[in-house]
Length: 116
Image (spheres, rainbow, N blue to C red):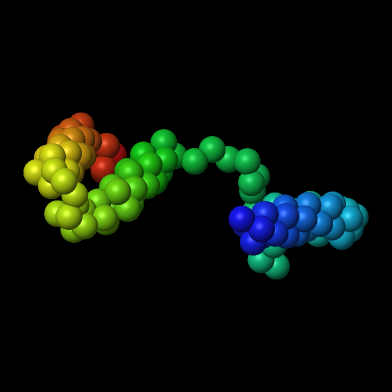
């Protein structure tokens, strides 16, 4: 029990010290170079505040959705060791079915087309 309290104290103290130091260290002196929208060495050609295409956001959200799906299904092989493996596989199949139906719907609606 004493070790757990010591570890919690050290973690809390270290977090507090790092949070306090992070407010003191940065030098906030904005100049023209730091305020420019690009940091690649080129002069900006247009406004950096132009809106993105809605299709770009749709593709990005679909990518995140399927990336999350992979993360959720990753522990599925260990589901065989649970008391009810059939229920685990049922829910995994249901998630895959819903995502597949959503992808088919997006495809039919033309949401995955880059050009109009």
